[in-house]
Each structure stands twice: as C-alpha cells, then as structure tokens.
Amino acid sequence: MLKAIIFDCDGVLLDESYKPLIQELRRHSKVSPGKIERDIVNLEQRFYGAKSSTAFWSDLRQKYDTRLPRQNLIALYNKDRLLPPYFLTKKLAKGFILVLLSNQIEDRADYLKRKNRFGHFHHVFFSNEIRLAKPYARTFRFVLERVGAKASECLFIDDDGKNVQVARRLGLLAIEYKRYEQLKRRLKALNIL
Image (cartoon, rainbow, N blue to C red; front, side, top):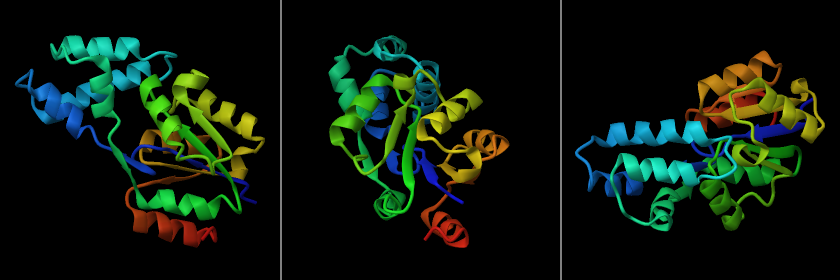
C-alpha cells in the first residue's frame, strides 16, 4: 500500500527560470543563452552536496567576469513560479506522507525555506543540508529511512529520467514528470486522485 509521495521541486512543483540570471550574464559575455544555462546547471551539480554555495557564486562570477554583487545574482537566480502539480500536493498531503527531495545549492534552499511553500509537506530534504544528492541510491535510502517507509510504499515524481531510473531500481514506484495532464492521468490510474 502506498504510504508516501516524494516530489522533486524545480521542474515539477516550481518553474525555476534561469532567464533573469542568463540575461544579466549575457551582458558580460557573447555566450549563447543555452551555453550559459548549461554552465549554470553544471555548476549546480558540482555544488549540490556542498554546505555552502559561496564557491558556486565565485566560480560563476569569475567565468562570466561580472562584478554584480552576489546578493543581486542570487535574487536573479531565485525567480520562480508555482506549477500546477504544486496545487495537487495540498490535496495529497491529507492522505499520504508528503516528502520533498530536491537537489539545491545553499542560497536556493534558503530562499525556498523563506518562501515557506512546503509547510504542508511532512518532510523536506535539500541536498545541501543532507549532504547527499540525487541520483545516488544512498540519497534515496537516507530519505526512506528518515520517512520510515519501504521503497515499495513510496511513489517518486521527478522530471529527471536519471533520478527516476535509480528510484525504480531501488523498488520505488516512479513517474518521470513531463506535463501536468500526464501526471494527473498516472495518479488517477494509480487510484491516488
């Protein structure tokens, strides 16, 4: 029987747009927006398990030769909006243990906590705080232990196929999120909605 639903954050519940940050960095570089976005994502992946994001911002500022203060860059980085699955979580929290498992750097995690968008979640795990990141199996095992659930009792929802594959290998039921309607159909088919 399904006990817990584990959600990813960015790309599933929130639309984290790099556009404002990319526009600022392009002012200092002739690099394409796509290349800048790949650089940001690659840097994020290097620092997901780090306690502090100071080196992330230092590396980004150096790479794009910007003197914009770190706080300004952070403000541009933390622009997001709620996606439709977020509103489903309020309903799901009444019948399931709701868990957030998100790869984040320190400043993004701090921003998300300040916004308090996940107060209805029973557990919130940010990679920079637990010092573990997806897609590693030990990250999922850590979350299962803390939640007190077996893999077979959990549904995992993420927009990254690598994370979904690892979750499935560990025995979690998993959905690779692509669109809201696709998610709703899958949840209905599982008798969750």
